[in-house]
Image (cartoon, rainbow, N blue to C red; front, side):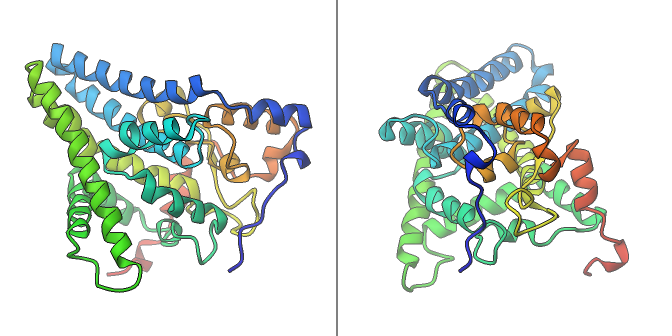
Length: 318
């Protein structure tokens, strides 16, 4: 197995610069989990107060549910808190579990992705390998996302795996089933707790309209767009500056599409232990040095989607 090439931080930063941008803060890390839930709570409260705001609350909450996935991802790198117990509690129970994720299962999977990024052994290669695709194909995928079809398929597979229905007996498969079962149980417990809370305050319907609906629709779409932007149609699978992509995001895109600096994915792969709340600063320092010109950086998500969906229609599979 050929591991992905690495870059030494001190080849691009001075020691003082690196010590600054790599400095971790428990207040920032754990505070972003609190922030994420505060945004979700405020969006729910606004929509409960004025139901006309549901149309705005759904994409805001769906994007913050992606934010929870981003924060679980950070916890997989030990980046929410220096204390492992706190890091893993916030990363699993307050970030991953409510959206169906499992930090315990995700961490080894994701670290393998970093070790073999864009190489044949990369477990995430399946997400980027099919691109470019046709515009028609991308539209079909987005429609499936926004109509809940993707969500239903994912949850059906998760529960089937938890019950061992999709896992054949064999070496290691028992661990897969156990991991799927733990994720399903955590998901049901946290969602059950949220349903009970909303019921006790007299708004049981909000669980279905303001939690499950965003998760089943907008969150599915923005998660797909995140995956496309990060690794699809990158210029060079062997260049550590060009096998992941950074995409500039406007304020609106950060609200509805790319929370918690998830758009700085090239920097994250170059230096995977940089705290997510310092990625923008790291990007600025690299830009000032002219280094971003050697990196895979795109101006907008729209441009990324155009390049990922530019396959001629005549070449699309039947």
